[in-house]
Length: 468
Image (cartoon, rainbow, N blue to C red; front, side):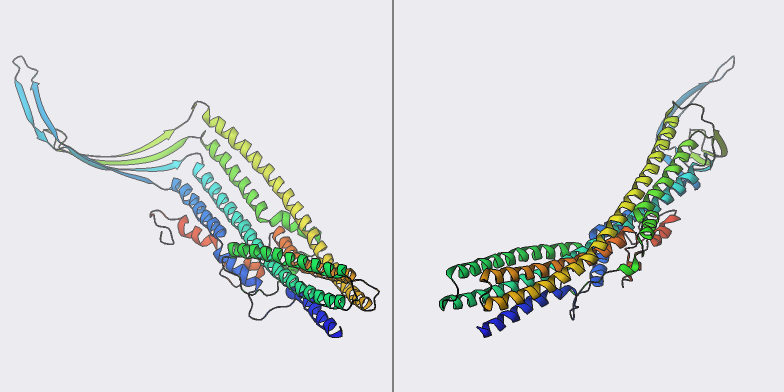
């Protein structure tokens, strides 16, 4: 009996140690920072958003094209048969007939330069630049989402692996408990009911193992989807409270001012304001300069070559164009008002998210202390119940219940440790600071400005900077 008790205690100790997987780093293990680096480099959704930003960059050179001249080359060639008869205007008219085949051809060039168009080009350029900035902030939002998903997937897998280990060790304890109960039944110390209770609890433990295995496999699949590689042995994750503001008021101020969704809404307001000015520019005169050169050969049987060159300044003053231009201005103003309301909405959402994340983090911190106390109390209770059962003051069911309470407490502690880490990253994302730069990840940071500068002043060419 004493030997069986020592075996059971060693098994229970294994269950107790299994719950600290989140608190003790493992040698040669994958780290949370490493997983974040993999997600930052490999996540297809993030790479797709980067491509979207590069496509948005092209709006600026498209707007700048309004400052540049437009050159058109033209040419024509054909074959004609002429047969003409002319009559002289005299009292004794004579008739002259000309006939033959000719090959008329012409070529020329036209250059047009807009000098003034109601500042539409400059306003389109500013609107395109604001749109580019909004796209960059949207990319920051995508980066935060991917990194937070990576943290969640990593910590979920770490938690579910620890819980699976706890449930497996719990089955070992229950098997030893059943063996002891059967031995005591054989010598008449307990009844068949005690054996049945041990058997029932063992079957329940095995069911919990199967459930934990299914949850663990689902977490492995999610890890592979988010981070892009198969998981190895995971090391402990740690909170990032040091990167977040120290008070709730500071967190709200930072979140409502610099969160990427707020910045996106602000740039959308700027773009909408410039769109109003572009629409108003349709009411202004347009002044352009046009140069044209033309060379014609064999236009007629008598005219072998003609060369013309011209320069023309053209002023167009709109008076009334059916009312569409006024409708477009009103529409642009309404869109501007909508964008301003969207900015207020996003700020309110950012504030709500910060407050919610702050509360979740505070609750997670308190929950760690509560579950640790619960584990300690459950350990003491289990030891006491086992000692009392040895002298006949407790039943087998009491021991099984105390043991299950300890396992539940350990599972709760593992979950609380996971929640503590994830909540710290969630708050960091809520204030807009979840980025590779802030986390000091060892990964080349994607710089959107590089592609922008490569294409901004490009006049010709269809190949992208990366060679496509």
